[in-house]
Image (cartoon, rainbow, N blue to C red; front, side, top):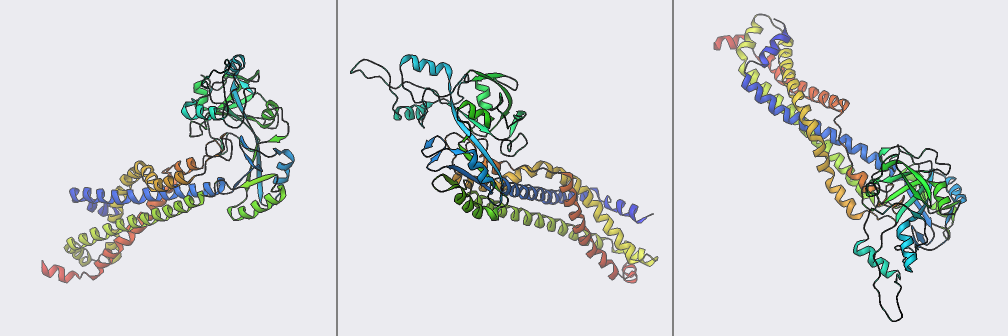
Length: 472
């Protein structure tokens, strides 16, 4: 009988014990593999955050942000200046505007109301659309409307409460640097806008805005009496962020009748190490009286550091689970060597070398580990996602508590928009038990198992046949 056949037979000699050993090994191996998968997921997320969040600078007009404040608007010439700053890899210029429902704006005009349409000085003569906002004004919206000076028409000396109004829809023009495959704008349906360098009639809608208006990919709506077609839908992760739409930058500038004007610029730096230097150079190139340069997500560096700690913890847990599996193998094989002293003595008496006897025990251990690995891999596939989520929950909570709020429009650079989902990036860690990771983990398990089995295998060399047979 071959050594391999004898090893497999010995592994199943006591079926109850074999089942118990495989079950214990499966738990240890499954935990080790799940921790390895979680470690890889967190490692990938840290790299993604460093690339897509930690290296981003936001440029707003000096003294203004979104629809608030004052100052002079940014221009295409300033965008070119920013792109020429050392260590800057890309500059995304955007133009934001507010859209009012055409029917509601007409009703306000007919009734003589002077509604502002919300904070930021946006009047009823702003750009109109056939879309209805997906977010109700509620108490806060109506309170802001009243605070902005809205008043109804009435006779002298009469008092009339400020009427309810609907929130505007935020429209943002984006450039060619952002497409349907980018990390910033995650499409759930459809495609990108296509030609970002020219005015077009395509638009990307937030999912709640599309649902509110009964629109889908291929549906049409109007802005300023011009028909637009829905090219895709995105999910910004918040109700406010999804009450928005995106068009090409030239289209937004045309709708606003402000060619060459930008609302904000998103500047990407080539590495985190160069962010501070690039920020200083960018501010100097644009002028402190013309633009404000901020690193809007700088506070996320704390969260990234927390994720680094989670990565280290998951690796330590992987090593501990791996060592546990090795210890289990060691104890089981020591017990088997003691139980089979007579069998080992007989084999040595008939001339079996220590190498052959030791190999038999190593192969028997590998058979047990192989069965445990199959069950453990299945456990890891189901448990790795939950373990990864549990490991990052504290980091996500910290980020949610300290994350910077976006501008009122929810356009790029703000957490509320589709472009600024930094905390959404943190909470979107996906642990995928890929074949490569599982194979790497199982290879490590087999390596530890061989080491654990070699120790009792070497004990066989100390067994003297004459002592064993005399005891019989």
